[in-house]
Length: 136
Image (cartoon, rainbow, N blue to C red; front, side, top):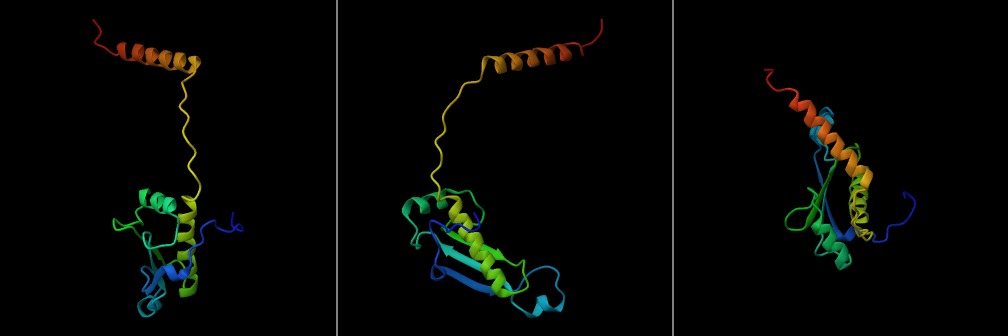
């Protein structure tokens, strides 16, 4: 799927990107250069279709705030451009994950054999536990 185009591409003008200082190891460079990227994407103000917006807001993803803003922090690479590209790719991946229509669940019943095996296992376990009582 790396080569296939996204059904709902996100334009960079809908995204607010700010450069911040990265955390973690990196020596003196970490303290001087702002290479990490903080990406903010307002779902409600975007040009995405309404059903995609609703699915995004319904996700239990910790990157989506209560106000409906996706916040992604990218700080893996040492260059600002690579971190920006990675943050945009992660946002696009999040949007693509909800772009497909969810498959409806068809309720099923357990087979007779699986019910029998389950009940036999329960009775076997019960017999083991019954044998643990006090000896008279």
